[in-house]
Image (cartoon, rainbow over all chains, first blue to last red; front, top):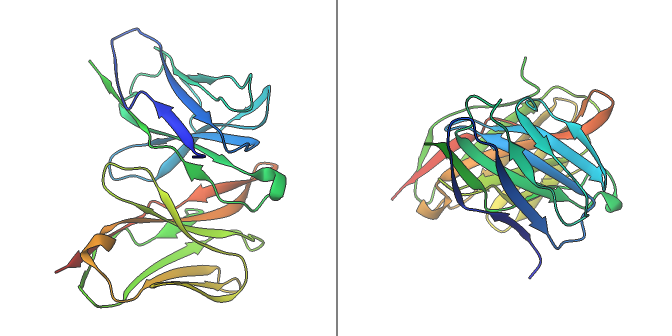
Length: 115
Length: 113
């Protein structure tokens, strides 16, 4: 089955710790995205990548970092510089090879909390 | 002005009624519009895409697009309690030098049995 896999489902971060959220897709999509969602709020874009080895900052990139070494994988690191990391993190991908008007499809999300 | 605006709700309708969800957007040249459904604690799920003016029907769902008025809506006919969720409108807007999918903050719908 094709899809987007995020892990872990739940993650706890200690003070001063960096944590990495995994996102893997087998849809052969070129573009991948990371969003943050706070309770009762919409989605805010953290980072996105249109092709391998290239990525751009979204609206709230401070305190986060990403890499895109493989087409299938787009891990997100929440650094200790992100002072309020508690949120629901969503990874998405889209098939931009079909043009720029394609929808995004989401993984099941990772819920991050501070210990 | 927010780039993609939705009524935050909550919107309550009785079972069997038509639920109407509305969305306005700021970019006159947007070409693609999507509706996502998000159940509590879950990730968004794509339910409708619309690219041309007019109506697009898929089962109990109808998306309506009016580019001149910069308005897109979602109608849910014969609403069921299982339709209770937050509905997110998403529009491809220019951000900087590129188009990005921009989400509204969502409308929470409750269908009362």
